[in-house]
Image (cartoon, rainbow, N blue to C red; front, side, top):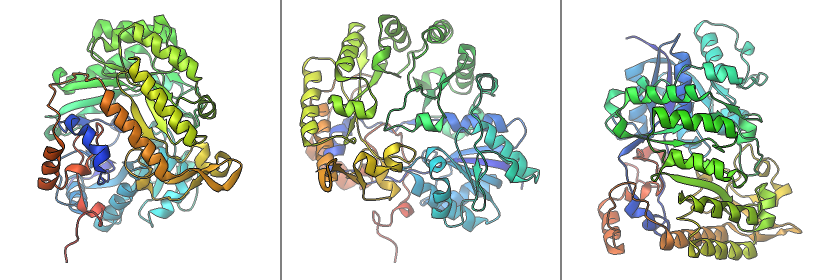
Length: 514
């Protein structure tokens, strides 16, 4: 059997039983008929494909090799590809899914070299290797393209690993690799869309486009600045369009929808103007989602964004909170600037969905009440169509995770499953800044606060008409669906696509065979 040099896996997500009060309001929006693509992972494969035999499998979403359990699925995938090296990408919330996958890989073939990359393992590199109990051989820290090429080249050609920058093993840690320069970024091969198996190309395809990497801001809750090591690098518009054309060559136009996932899309006005002009002249398909920041909502930028999203897409702005002191702690613009930005956007009649963080350091019962009032104000004054609410969690790499006492946070769990931002009681309490023996906002209160925001959104949100709208089901109909399909509430109320369910990922959800 021919052996692959490198197989890239997307780690499985570990579905949880969502409380009815979170899931039910979103049940009419459930749409499992699309496949999200991995921008970063496919970019790595594009680099490696020029010299090595590579493959790709998304354990969270691919169906054609799936078996009834994760262990059987991993065995099926390994049997098909017979890889020498397996790399896995994960975030904090699905680290445990990656950990279980690594265990199965080593049980199937202990000689397979295992690699992990992504934000979580970048900041928890040594800890992650220990947590994986000998099943994780190497961690890639930070931006991956240069590191993964050097690493695979060294492994395949038996060169010393200590010469590879940006990696961690159980016995040594090399110095950080420098980020790609703008020139290197623009010279990268396009993502390897052909790595998506033919069997998985029948679904609607979701692809997140990036025209830049990095962020020039240091929001307290975000790891982007640390992960990308500082400033922003912009891709040439021709590079962005070339990537999209490759995507269209691989999949039919009508089965693709795209977002621009740059942290602040119109950050550099002249570069953004060039991108919009080229995109609208050569592609001109509506972008479904884009991100900006309050201080980049002048008329010229908003007019350009309007040309991208047309009358279809949604613009999001990180308002995050309604209290000025909390916004200061977050390092976000003031409430007054946020409010003016929302009014500016409304002038252009774009669909507007700000993000909102719940339970951030600095919050109290008083700020909770203030935030609920201000969200109600935004809806009543038709300044927003809906919100994207998240529970703040202290992600590895952020200052509150590294120094919780300084930010008056008491972390009560390091079970990474609980670091999802919309499932559980959060894994922390917020403490009184003057007396850490007192709780200012407990995780139960933060959860209730989250449900209050969900309730406001469900009551007031505008229907965006992205697709044919299904009639909202009654609560009795919802209970009937749950009774007849016990897996129904295991899936995310957000747009995660059809997430694979593996019973061996959670022994407490599904009774074990005796």
